[in-house]
Amino acid sequence: MPPDGTTDAPPNARSEPRSDPPGLREQIAATIDAAWKMVEAHVELARAELSEIGDEVKRVAALGGVAAGLFLFLGILLPVGLLLFLGEWWFGSIGWGVLLGTELCLAIAVTCVALAFDVSGAAIARSFILAVLVGGILAAVLALALPNEGWTRVGNSSGLNVEPGVRPLAIATAVIAAIGALLGLLPGARSGGIGGVIGGLIGGAILGAIVGALSAVRFGVGPGAALGVALGLGTWAALAGLALARKGIDGEAMKARFWPSQTIETTKETIEWVRERTPLGPRP
Image (cartoon, rainbow, N blue to C red):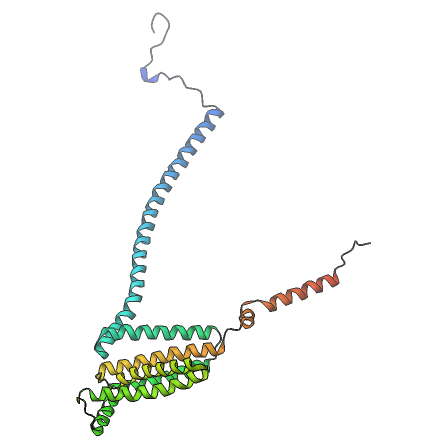
């Protein structure tokens, strides 16, 4: 034992002074700080994940937009290209594809408008069937050049002093122009006045000359058939438009189709029924 009365103890046996435990305020602050750091970590994680999701959304939207645009382009390219291809394949020129496609779209559009204005389905069916008959007959006749053959035989038997190559055209133009003039004279006379008669005569003659000249031309199989189909499609559009003009547009019928009259009348009846059973004055 040392002289001063102290005891020697090994260094590792000495106890360190203990610090006081944290108070309630410090614990609450530490808890709040830990919670805030946890929230910040989750927010950063969410931001990173949402950024990745946003990039994926942009990528998918861009690719989807390109795909939708290509599908739309394909939907336009296929029918247009098909019409041009069929015009070249069947009739020898893509111009026929453009003309026939235009007439087909016009005829379908006029038919849809006629149906929208409540033209009867029977009238639309009649116009379509008649157009098919006209187009089929004219396509066969013009493809086989039957009018040209007929005018050629008439010219050969007439003995007309005209060059044989031009003779069918001259005879057809003269004959059909005369018939057209006579047919145009009738509506001109009905309209009254000498002006109407002269106008109908000249107009009928011009139209007849055009028809006669076309009938004397040898188009060939492809162009002749295409011209017949074109006339058939034009007939379809014209007959559908004529059916619409005959039916007319009935404003009252259109209002009845698009005005909820039954609902309005039922609502009025309900209001009247409630008024009859609900006293409006003060209750005793």
